[in-house]
Image (tube, rainbow, N blue to C red; front, top):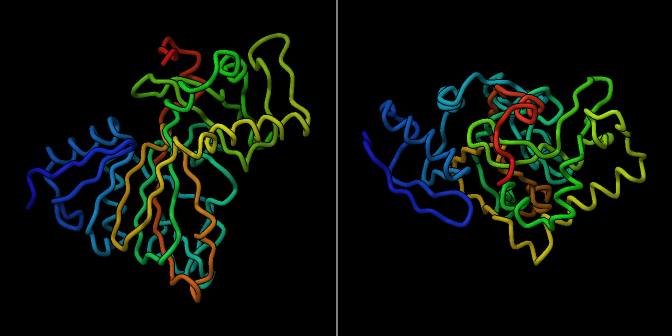
Length: 283
């Protein structure tokens, strides 16, 4: 049983070797893993083989209470495991291709963590990640000031409105709540007397502006993870945005079968409460 593991840091995230997640993990190592997810935002566990769905659920509980998505597939091995594939007979297709996003932005408190396990990796089909604090740090002062005024609305019927920029509930670093493909509109200065809802045209322009920040400078801010069967990633969902690469939708007959299992952890603090608090959002 591993009592320590090897950690190789990279520009975003860290690669973990020397631990088998299928085995029992000592409490001290679990705490270390939680701390490293907060510090590095992505922990990438290599050489895991196939982690059983029940074990993925147990690992997920290290980070809190699971919260299942509304997506279900008959082939899912557990009610809390979201099964994704490039073959509709094996899992849900088209997932992650609606633009850059964090998971669960339509909820009052978006998911705090997302855990991804590739059960079968195709020859092509990457997931692309990007750090949100650094993206905000790279904005011009004028654009940063404009974005600070924005609040996102996924679905007006649900009545959930999130500040576009707010302090992360654990680190207090500036982060973003957004989903390019699931934003109905924005509200300027939501908590002020002069609050105004964006038109469809203005909403599209703002979303295009956000997208441009992820892809400018030859996509310098991105980390592209090319999956290998057995990879297991734990992501601080509130600190890292992601998008499925277009190749994830290529048919299995061309690139091989893709099967991924994802679990998500219930958020604890709504972004609006972080924004209203005394946390520092200057980072």
